[in-house]
Amino acid sequence: MKPASLRPFLPRPAIRRRSWPTRSYAIQAPGAPTLQVFNRNTKCLQKERAASDVRTSRKVDYLKDEVASRLCERLLDIKRHFPHVLDLGANACNVARALTLPDPDIDLNKPDSPPLATRISHLTAVDSSSTLLYRDADLPFNKDINLTREVLQDEEFIPYPENTFDAVLSSLSLHWINNLPSVLSQINNVLKPDAPFMGAMFGGDTLFELRTSLQLADLDRRGGVSPHVSPLADVRDIGGLLGKAGFKMLTVDVDDIIVDYPSTFALMTDLQAMGESNAVLGREMGAIQRDVLLANEAIYRELHGNKDGTLPATFRIVYMIGWKEDEGQPKPLPRGSGQINMKDILEGGGIKTD
Image (cartoon, rainbow, N blue to C red; front, side, top):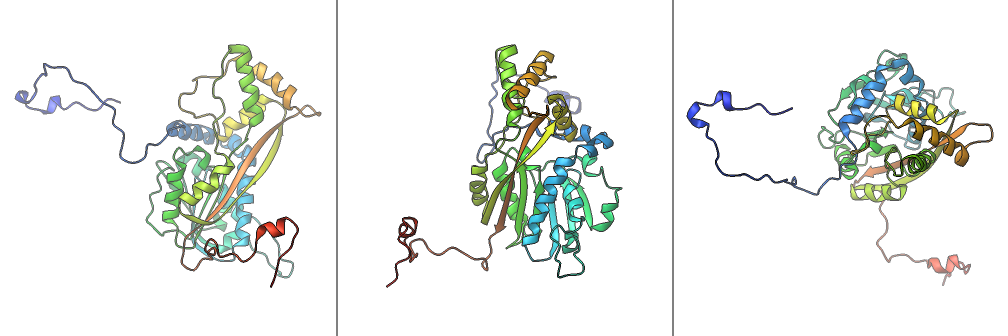
């Protein structure tokens, strides 16, 4: 939208016409330049559109619910109570729902194993899509956890003061962030000292079957390649990004979830209903051509199809845990202070003692 003109509000003598040519320049904002990969506005609209069909949106939440459950299970290893937790990029509050489920690690020595929600006093769930965030606000699980929903203008900017939260969780949202190093630094900033960040995001070879078959179909039918599947962060880069953001005691692991679909059309329909459609800047607008889709179906079946006729789709989930630095945390010994030569152990010589 064009900015409003000041001409109607200025006195007539103040309006002058320039008689010489002018030149405009592009100006880079202060700080390191940010590579824009995704259209954040498009992504928000996709999520809004997907969540407006409540029945279908809930039906395709199988992946987000599963990953949220696996992420919450990692809280079992942290024996503490969390007064205030942030769920960044909450989607439909899948993490909140997972926290209210029965404890997955039941202690047979205890007569009662309460859900993980009992260890969290207050959960703040934030997302840029209000329709998706409030989609399940009327479901029973909301009564089992102290949950507050807040709509953010953009998850790339976290509007909370320093040292606010006792933990930050994020499930299947960070893969749409343009400036991931900045967001990780902001997460570290809003955490209290010695508080954990636990995240899960699509990464690496997620949907490699669909990516390769669409590329081959494009080459065969159109003689070129268009980016139909979004680029994703490699698991080897996550540890370095967490370290640069100031996190300590890092843990990064990978889990592949393979879902079988009857066809590539069913796969892409579910991705659209999840709000996970392509949002790359500069992507080709409009639907994929029919002949490309038909070629993609045949190539996918030939290269990756199962014997029973179904088509596997691999979702690679990268889980990460990092702790905000605190003076009382365990720290590694100074470099060069080791007393054991690893070469002797690896070569089978054992540990030499005087």
